[in-house]
Every structure is written in structure tokens, then in C-alpha cells.
Length: 150
Image (tube, rainbow, N blue to C red; front, top):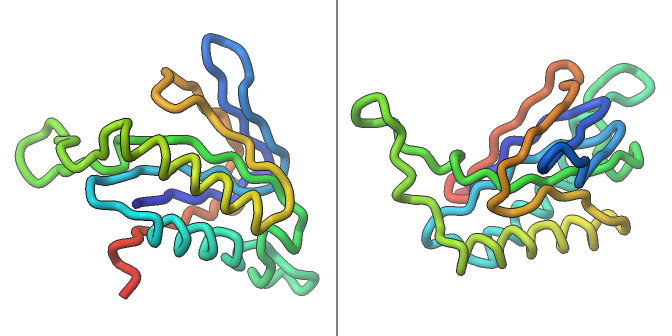
């Protein structure tokens, strides 16, 4: 699984012009699921997401987690994170997991982050054509790939 985590002052996702998920200060996360991903990837990424210290403390040092600053989380499915660009100029999505694997792992990730934070995670709609608006704070953008954890 791959995540793109952005520290934001605000973020929202729209489907057909209607806001379906929205947060103020917190993390906007794009979630890509690849073939072969398993629940252990979800567990590791959920823990890593909640524990990531990328918010500033009183001294202005990035030393606080999203839970410590009581920030929101908006998680959006993003199959294009699995793209391979090794050959040619048209990305290949052959590594992307199908719906039968991707939906349960995406939903599990959202549930586990929610449980670790003790509050709900805002979401997009899996497979929908979504428009995402955000204000990246910093900017701070972190890439995490569960296959690179060792």
C-alpha cells in the first residue's frame, strides 16, 4: 500500500459537486492499494499515520502527531499511486489491486485510523470521480510505502 500524506489547514472532497468529506487542520491522505497487499500493511500504515510527528509544537518544531493536535483525517482512495512509469509515457496501473481487495483494505485502513484516533475519518467515495481541494500547510508532504518498511 502507498500513502501520500499532506499536512493541511483544510481539505475537502466533492463528488458530483457535493462535499462528501471535509476537515479543517489535519491530514489529507491519498491511499493506493496494490495487488498482494495484506491486512498487516494496513496495520502498519494506520499506526504510522497516527504516530507521524509532523505538526509543530510550541517551539515551532515538528514534534506533534495528528492526535496530539486534535486534527482531522480525510482519506481518499487513489489507484493512480500504484502507477509504473518505467516504460514509455503512459503510466501502467497493472499493479493496482482490483475492487475485491482494494475496497476492504481501504475501508480497514480508515477504520483502524479512526479507532487509533478515537474519532471518525472523513472519506471520499471509492471509485468515484472526485475533486479534491486542500491547502497544504508548510508545505508538508510525506510518502509512505508499506513494502519499503524493512
